[in-house]
Each structure stands twice: as structure tokens, then as C-alpha cells.
Image (cartoon, rainbow over the protein chains, first blue to last red):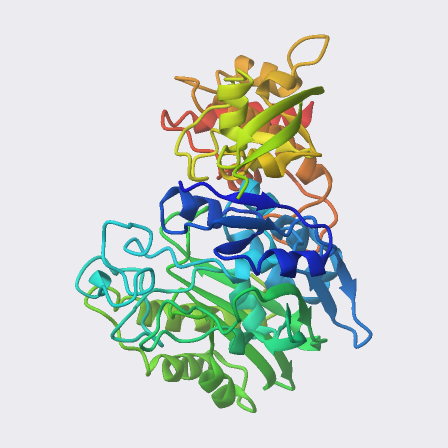
Length: 329
Length: 171
């Protein structure tokens, strides 16, 4: 690991000033960044530890939603009574990820900005357009059974690894960002960018911008929500596919629905097409299955990840059929 | 650029002052600088749990925490779990149930389980909790297995580890 300086500012202004130094990076819980530094993927010259900043609270908003501080630990987020009651899909998604030890360290802001777990990205002896632009993408002809089927490009087929972010896209979360131009609120879908020809850019944030929190708008139907994750072992593994969904049904008709898909795209994927098809339809398995199939029509599987198309279709259908019956799992 | 720091670590109730390279993890500070070798280095990437310690009473992977960032919080390692009257109830339960084989993962297992029982007592849900809104956790074997999934045992002594933790939870 390369040598680096370390600062732990207590104020947000001091953090922004510190990170303007060359090669400076924010450090949250460190569960991804420290690991990537050990691997030589990240080589910061200065770490600006943000865990001392006053962004560690979960507070109700005037509108009836929640404002989650960026340095709230994943374990505190999942255990929060208001999150569990109002947005169970979010608590479930966080609990589906990592281990107890990692959730105690990992922050909300760091979870959002974690890097892909593509094996070529994390191996500096291999080419990778995301890590070293222009070097190529060996995943496309190589090991890609857990890579993207939606939204990928000829330059990169890696997936975004977060569970939490999949729930947040379904909830239309607003990411609060502070940079030298002041504060802004970015809809979480707009935070992330598809790889296109620049897969090294995961998100739209300017260098030095600081995520200070995540705002959850009030959403009544989120009380009937769930996160379901398929993986290759029962616990402590990244998803091979996951679904975050919230559903409202009135007189047997779907009146509101939100669906986020994980481990299928370079970004946490919002299933807009499926949502539009479902709204106003009978809340039956047939409606859910048809919408799921329509969402996956755009899929372009690689040689070894075609299984994700039926996996995701079935997972979506099962979660939504469950929610229609009040089963929030 | 200053790449070393004066680091004050409170470990098992004792204050230590060290000059450390900023790259030093809490795990390496404990083992290489404080000779507290009970905490083990397994994968060194946060995947195996052998390095689990309590930081501010919470279980964490010491391999992913920089020592310089661990200041100002109480650190408890496996060496600090026994009380003046002897082994903690979980330590004794691991002995009684033969909850290990080679023993390399054991300090991490016991330290992790110690904090896990406190998490459950505080009502924290897990991925297998049926009602995520429930106040109380019924810590059965399924819950214990899910909550302990961050601690791997290559000897696969899991059956006895779960039994030991079940007893630790019941006592």
C-alpha cells in the first residue's frame, strides 16, 4: 500500500477544504476503500476521514419522510424503528448485505459509492476499463457469470454491488450533496451513470463533492415493501439478482408500485417499464409476470449469465405476488 | 505529507501511545505493536472474521480499520473478554461444547458472538427475522447462523459453535 496522510475533520467545511488537496479521498467506514488500497486499486495520497462529521443522525422530515445522515452506519440504519416501520424494504436490503461486522463499519455514503466487485477490476494485473481506461474488458470473454444483463456497454459489463441502493432507487431517495458550489439534492437514479465509453466514472459527482445524507420522501405504499436477494450461498454473499419492491392494491387493482433490481446492471436499476405496465392492472401473478418479462426484454445477456433473465423474472413475480398477499419477505 | 501519526489506543482498559505509519491497520497495531496476538489475521480483506474485535462495543473487522482512525473509542479484544472471576460465559460455553477444532477462528468467533448477543438483546433484526418491525428477537439457531455468517470456520465446527452460542444466549 502506498503511504498516505490522514485527517479527521470535525466540521464539513474543513472536510471540503482538506479534500481539495491532490490525491485526497474521503474515508467512511473503509470496508471497501481500505480493501481496494490493500489491493493497489486505490492509491490515495491523503485520506479525509468523514466519520467525525455531524452527519450521523436519522431524523424525520417535515414532509413525513426521513433524512438519513451519510455517516450513519449500515447497522444503525437497518435497526432504526422508523426505517423498519415506514420503509421495511430498506432495512431488509441493508440486512441482506455483508456481515454484522461490516455493517457496523460501513456508512450510508460509502455504501452508495462503493465500487464494483468485478474480479478484473480488483486485480491490478489484469486489464480493466473501469480501473485503467482504455486497457480493455476481459470480463466480456472471461469470467462474467455475475455481470450485467441490462445497461452495460462494450467497454464495461460490471454490476453495482449495493443492496441498499436498490431499495433507495425504488424509494426515489434524494442524495444530499455538498460541493464548492453549495448544496444540491440529486435523485438517486441521477447520481449513477451507465458506463458508456467512460466506465471509470460510476457517478456524476464532482471531485471533492461530499454526500451529507439521503432523504426518503414520504411514501405510504413503502410500508408494504420487501427486498429479496438471490445469491450463491445463504448468507454473506453478493447478489446474483435482487428485487426491492413496494406495492399498493385497492379493490384488487394495482394502484401504486415501485421496483428496483440489483446485480443486473452497472447501476441500481429502476424497473420503470414494468411499473408503468402494472399500474391499473389486476394484482395477479399474471400481471406481475407479464410486467417482469417486459422489463427483462431489454436484457442482453453475455455467454454465461443468461440465467439472470428467468431468475429476475421469477424473483420479481414472486416478490410482487407476495406483497399483494401481504407477505413482506 | 505526514504519513505517520501519534496514535492513542485504549485497548482492554489500558491506554497505549504509539507512533504508527498511517497504513497500519488496527489488526496489525494489536498484533505487531502491542503483542496482543489473540486477534488473528485470516484473509486480511474483511471476509473471514478472524480479526473481529469490539470497537466502541461494536464488533468490527480489525483488518479494515486504520489504527489512526480507531482512536477515542474503547477497543476490546479476545484478551479482554475474561473477567476477574475467569472466562466469560461464552468462552466457557465454547469449551463446554467443543466449539472449535484448530482454534484459529475461535477468538473472532467468541468476540463476534459476544457483540452479536448484545445486538440481539437490543432488538436488532437480521436478514432471517420474520417480522422486521418486531421489538424482540427470538435467537434460535437460524438467527444465530445468519448473524454469525461473517465468521468463517474452515474446520467447519459450526454445529458446536452454534450450540455454544445458544447456551451463551440462554445463560
